[in-house]
Length: 91
Picture 1 (tube, rainbow, N blue to C red):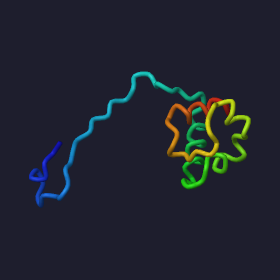
Picture 2 (picture 1 turned 180 degrees about the horizontal axis):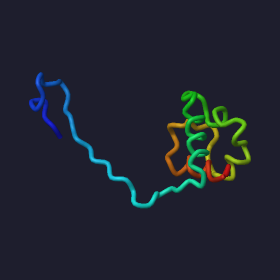
Picture 3 (picture 1 turned 120 degrees about the vertical axis):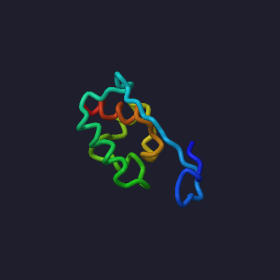
């Protein structure tokens, strides 16, 4: 953490440095990274809509059932593993 006194003028918030180290091997490898990006972009394109609506034309109810993903969820409710699973299913 970095205290406010480390800045001039001191902000009214606490700050911190974060170090991100890339994985040597991806924990959830996508077969097609472009398709993965397309799925994520579509899912978050209309954030307040459900996955059923944002991924319409890409994934049907049968696909959601096969992946054991609730189509009534919103994109922010899924993790990376679920998005990779969707992309790999579509590939």
